[in-house]
Image (tube, rainbow, N blue to C red; front, side):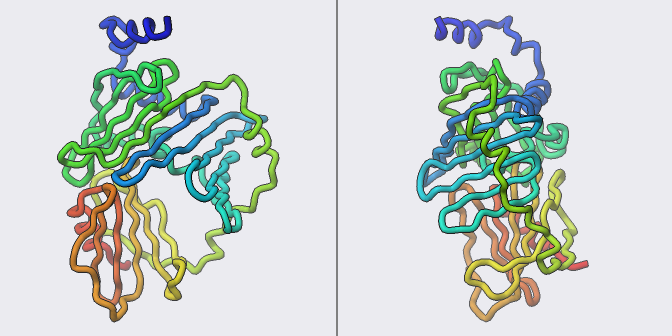
Length: 309
């Protein structure tokens, strides 16, 4: 009976899906990712590995609580209680940051301001498909320029929660895929979220405890990209301070590292692995490394526009 009903939803030309625009679907998705209680078993697929994980979300005594667990390799989890995210990893002290969502499953903007994405992408209603035993509606994010890649998301037609998210390069080849294999909507928060809401997690790291970063700026950024992080810290094994800058347009993320130039020769080739482009350049007395799921030409132009105020 369930398969028969799914077939009717997928095939009927008079279904509710036909009455909604791509923008309407995305707004409903954003609301569902904020309000609904659910458990999603997810698989993330890249060129050379598969990463299974479990994500739970619920409300406990008015608090928004989430839990993310990576199922392969050394234990690695994250817990969010309201606007505090705590990371738990093997052989490392737990630490907390201020954030309103756990990164690593869906792009943050899918549960945020959908209108912001319109600066860089056009929303197009696609076809329907069956994913994780559920009927899904595809929405395509078509890049408005050559500085970013296209992507597409399938939304559960019952809950509006995402079932699958793909990033595609210019040749329409799959760079990365996040796909739900089981989705359960919950009527009440699971026990693990209740326990997490009551636990005494580490205090949030105070940014003022770090050495203040230099005042970097960009003379050019693609439309819709904003600087969301700019700080100064030391990477493992490196004694010199490294400036870290994070850029995003809501779907594509770019990380930039700036350090004092060394005497070692810089790489002559650009490296692309798992869809991540990398650009390494020496500008004056600084070495700059930029990484992101965008064309290498985009990274090159951004790096060359980096200056100090």
